[in-house]
Structures are given as C-alpha cells and as structure tokens.
Length: 171
Image (cartoon, rainbow, N blue to C red; front, side):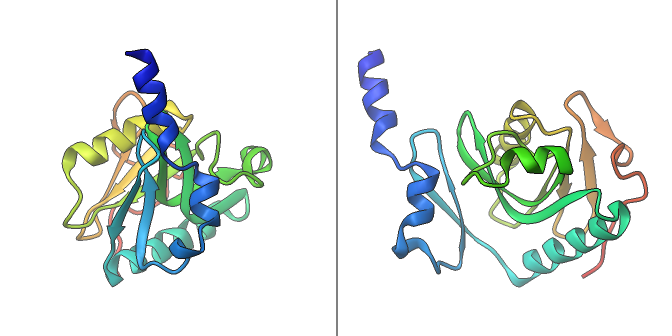
C-alpha cells in the first residue's frame, strides 16, 4: 500500500516544473498543485485583482518597507503548493525564501480573497496549511471587501501584526 501511495505522489509535477512549463505561462487562471502534484486552476474576476492590489498597497503604506509584499505567493505545504493572493514576508523570512520557486516557509501574513467558486472547506484547509507552514496570520477578504483576521488559535478582531489595517476595503 505504501508503495502505491509513493508511486502516486511521484506522478505529479513539482512547482519548479509547473513554473518552467511554457504551456502554463500565460493562462488567465491562478494555478496551484494538490498533494499529488496535479495542477488545480481557479479563474478569477477583475474585482479579485483590484482587491489584491488595494490590500498590497495598504500593507505597503502601513508597514513602510519592514519586509516584502507580494501577490500570488507560492507556498509549499503538506498538500501541495498553494498560492496566497497577497503575502507579507518580514525581511528575515524573505531573505530565507526569495530564491525559491515556492516558499519553504510561509510568509507571516497570507491573504486569501474569496471568489464565488471558493468552497468554505477549501479556504479552511488553505488557512490550516498556511499556519502549518509557518504563517502567523491569515486574512480572508470576502467578495464585498470585509476582512476577517485569524491567528493559529482563534479569530482576531483586527490584525495583531498590522493593527491599523482596515476591516473593510472598497475597490
């Protein structure tokens, strides 16, 4: 049985192989992998990108260069490579992962922006995977711009890492 499981996990692609595949370069979808190295694609709407930009912009203003903010942050997890819509890495953590294809340690803040196709279980799983990979906070932005903040133990009223971050944003 263990042999069959090992063969199954070897069938899929590594994140480096996904990134190197010219056929996947210009797809209009967010790409992630699951635990078996299979590609999972999620189409996004324009509003999704607007929320990404606005959240990144606000983080940049509030954190004033105390780290690195990126969009589409590939993070290695126990269930494949997941991609946070927006992420903040402290300077130290960024130095550790900046040359990797998918971060071996999650950024301190991982932000997921919901779309109509996201299942609640999918987002809960990603939240758990980000914490397991080392995230300190996970933020969920719903389709109306309301933000929900979490640490590994509980729901937060606001971000402990960026206390002035608004609980709602407009795009």
